Image (cartoon, rainbow, N blue to C red; front, side, top):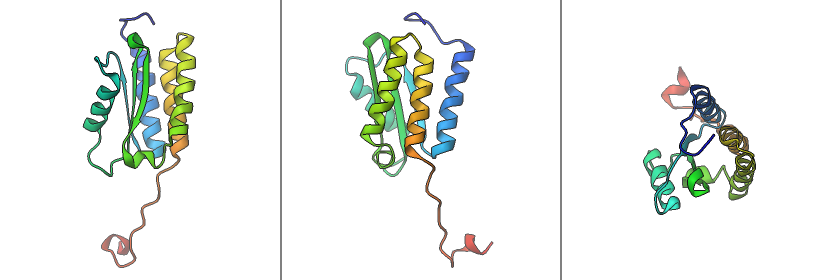
Length: 137
């Protein structure tokens, strides 16, 4: 994909399916931002993540990629960081940048999403106290 090109419908669909699969597998809200990230890409990524998360306890992860700036960053909320370690994010970033170097932007992001979801694992089961109304149904 040349700089400035838009994604084909098939590429956009592949990215969306991978994002949804990562969310379903892990229970974490995932978002992907591909494009320019302004003069301070890290600050922009953190602000985008802030808009994605509903609150302090919300588990959310943003993959921010700016091909023109040669920038890729995975940012997590504090709650998601408990399940997606810095090491896991670093490995996912390495896998993505390897694909990017070969010209496969979409494949790199899809691989990153899969690795992050695998690292997070399945969401913890919600236990309902025995006396709670939902437990009596």
